[in-house]
Length: 221
Image (cartoon, rainbow, N blue to C red; front, side, top):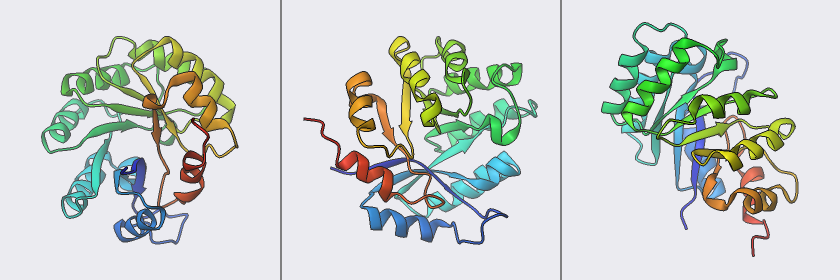
């Protein structure tokens, strides 16, 4: 069975002097036995989405094991819909929203407009969440979208809320990212089913093995 990592991110970070590039990511994937990975670029998160997405597309075009996921920053509003269309046409496999990293709110008209454009493109989207209540609000916002919506960066403090909204909304999926407490994988599978869980490491910033080991060692019989 091939293992696919649903969330990796390459690119230089000012606060980290490690080489977080394609070579480092592939080495980490090989060490953990991961065959393929969905990938974003840090430049698109921290600096300029269009520039970072363009850099990522070029890198992934040269490495068949990596699949590009576009970062969408709806805050500028102007040009965002065109960027979503362009990325869909250029072979990006999905979109990722990072509201806290970019300083915008889920309850914003530019976000709603971006969601509509993604739905037209027909590709899955992930939204990073961090605070109580956000999963509930997001579920209501996207409940009519006919595309998969992934709850990303879910921590233990909001895991219960995420499970609760997923049981009420069938179009939601969950990234299993840094959830390493014994028994948590078994709990999620029992509550949601394995088909709604996505393995996501955040490599190469984070190591792949800790989270993947919890999945491999889970008692799912």
